[in-house]
Image (tube, one colour):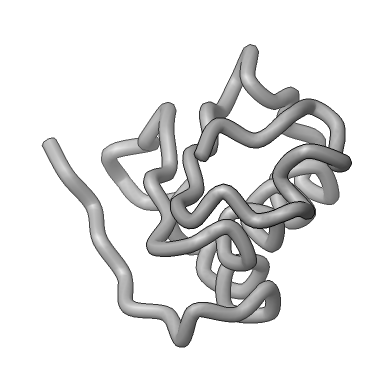
Length: 77
């Protein structure tokens, strides 16, 4: 099953949408984000929620921006 949400391609929207997506009834195990900024925001929110990436939640970005190479754990992009 797929759960989706619309963000605005920013770190802030990735961070804001992650809790509602992760706590949805379907409990997704992965987030595929529209770009790396949203993915890093999702990782930030997941960390604040106590979720281990990638053990408990996988996060994928898109764009291969420089930030994807410097964060931990590394972002798949």
